[in-house]
Image (cartoon, rainbow, N blue to C red; front, side, top):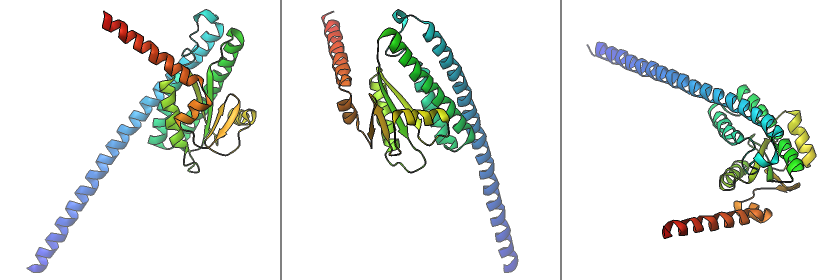
Amino acid sequence: MRAKIETKKYILAFVITATVFFGALMISGRFEQSRLAEVKSVENKISLDILSSETQFALLKESSCKVIDHSTAFSEELNSLAQKLAYMEDTLSEKNAEVVNLKKYYSLLQIKDYLLVAQVNEKCGVKPITVIYFYSNKGDCDDCKREGYVLTKLREEYPELRIYAFDYNLDLSAVKTMKSIQGVRNTLPALVISDEPYYGFKSPEDIEKIIPDLKKFREARDKAAAEAAATSTKK
């Protein structure tokens, strides 16, 4: 009698375990399908951003200096594209073939934007503040992610600041040429500001010291905001 009870216990335990296992497997499968659908949606948006950026490049090349807003007009899509690529890296890993290909395309778009800015500078005599950032996500750069957060914050705070971020280890000839032209060595994170390379983590305060104009931009905005507030109060 006891043997029968023990057998029933084992069978019941097996059924419960199997139910939990297959239930978890089904939930995991649905979650994976949902995640893949979300990634596919991001890929489609990235494709549209890429097309929009390339079209914008063509339009700006033909525009006169009067119609170009030098602080924000150059391919604003690059910023949102960077955020989507970061999402895909976190979701699929930076080694995923699709992510690597998209990163290569994004890097080429950044270089095209960099060259466009140079052309507009030559044509219109306006030189935006540019930071070229080289990083690594191979696990050999502890400060790279922190530096990325700093640059993202600065880009949000200063629309006048143009930041180009490149994976130092990306197997792309154009990126290798950028490294060679800028004279950047493999000591990361690395920033190139006004053709001068800076190595190691740089805080927002460090970068503001390197680029004094950023403080002027902030002071001008604070003054404009104060004047607007004062005008609003008088009304």
